[in-house]
Image (cartoon, one colour):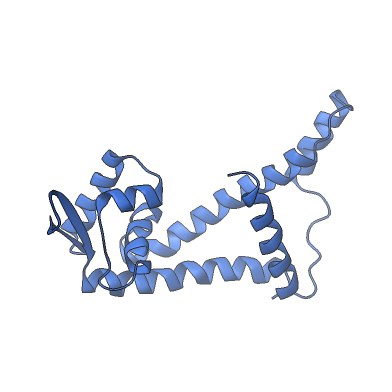
Length: 170
């Protein structure tokens, strides 16, 4: 991790807060500064991670499906409903992703033996191998971003602070 770079003194979010302070000095813009940086960071990293997944023929949405199946453990099988709940997308959006991934041979859909109306989605061996490679590529991008700006101690502190903030907002 970075041990020397203190980071930029001012950034675009500071400029926005300064503009608000000029026209509304009564506003506390700290929340705007915190969440503005979180949003900008999320957008920037989404693009970097998407590029890391591209050589594996997937974008973030497809990666999320495959990664969810992989994290579920052997036999890497979930119902479409379980996947939809985990990924917080519509059933229509999930169907499109599953169609694409099944066509690519990265997963299979089969009847649920316990529910005649249900399906089970299973990660294929090829899908497991591909998602294992993609997760390493995505983590390398994320690690590079952290190491360019933060020490290990700062990264750990940031993780704790973000966990604390997230726990009070969801």
